[in-house]
Length: 185
Image 1: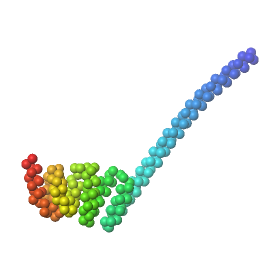
Image 2 (image 1 turned 60 degrees about the horizontal axis):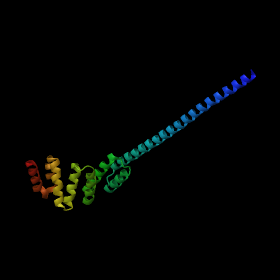
Image 3 (image 1 turned 30 degrees about the horizontal axis):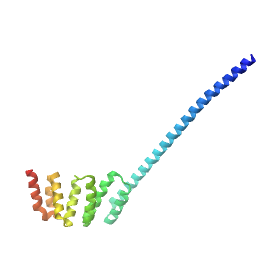
Image 4 (image 1 turned 90 degrees about the horizontal axis):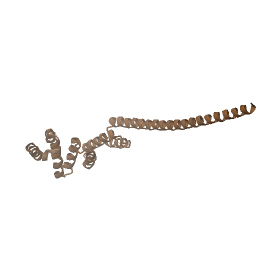
């Protein structure tokens, strides 16, 4: 009977150790998976915090930009905002820069900003308008007429705005011809 009891006890202990081992392994796998998930969540939280911080910093710079009167400082602020590389800000930055350069009469830079945006959105009438103005002021009349043709093809109602702009005063005949040609097509 003693042998049976010892044998039964030994078998029971082996079975308990086997089950403990199986559950221990499952627990270790669960803990490893849990730690990996926690690490991934922590990394995602950190990434989101960084994005929020960047957006807050960009918003602060935009608020500074809106209070600034000095065009040179405005350009500097726009360059700092551009460092954040938010898609929405890119169009706003290019538009603002082009407008400032036009106001300052820095036509080559206004043309550069317009062309950068037109690479992204070739049908943007505002940037086509800026480009046409810049080309006229840089005395590239042939290219300006091509851009004006494109503008009026996209949006014929811009005729009056173009004719009212003193920059296009010497091209009023060409603008009228473009509009007539477009209406006959």
